[in-house]
Amino acid sequence: MTDTTPLPASLPISEQTVLVTGGGRGVGTHLVRAFAQQGARVIINYRSSHAAATALAAELEVEHGAGRVIALEADVTDREAVDRIVADATAHFGTEITTVVSNALPAFSFNGDDRPKAADIGWDDVAAQFEGTVRGALNTVQAVLPGMRARGFGRVITVGTNLFQHPVVPYHDYTAAKAALLSLTRTLAHDLGPDGITVNMISGGLLRTTDASAATPDAVFEYIAAASPLRRVTTPREFADAALFFASEWSRAVTGQNLVVDGGLVNN
Image (cartoon, rainbow, N blue to C red; front, side):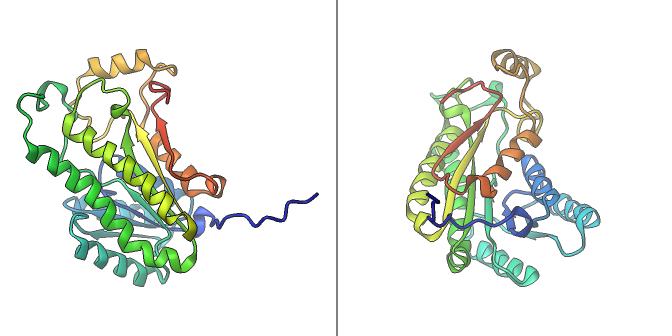
């Protein structure tokens, strides 16, 4: 007997309009490149990386066609600023944003020797991470939600970490905020599923190398490589590839999940 149950809504990546927050630097640039290479329209959101973001947009427009990539400034903790770039992007592309990669990261350096320790970390450190990570993601999702609901389709991808499963270095503020983001990812998935919107997280380990991991000693990278089944450290490009899966039609029945992309270091 043929199954006549209708499939959930899907849209090829080449027809998606993708907002990457924090797309002007670090792993964000790899996320932007991955979607542009698949033919998506891409918005590079940045806060302070104007020169890098605009240069990346110009480069990708040469490679993939004029009008396909735009760089827009906004602090994702400012809801009015996020609403503005969503409106500007919608006007620029003539279509709603279908896909969000919530990647923006508050200022942070993965330097275990210089991290705030349990006895002296201040709440301001923790609050800053929650503000940028959780509030930024919520602002972004809420800003694009009307357009996604109107289409009956949406893909939200949050960026987490494997540190709350395997705190090889106890970054208290960063890890707590990312754990809260996973909780938000799962509750949003439950709430938005009936609208045809999936919400998933990709969690990397330490990536070699991004702006945030530039201060990481080689010994830490060597330890992670030795402890991982693949015997190497995951690259930012490999991490970005996983985001393509969650945006693709192949994941249309997957939501509320956390995919750990770290070469097998953490098994959950």
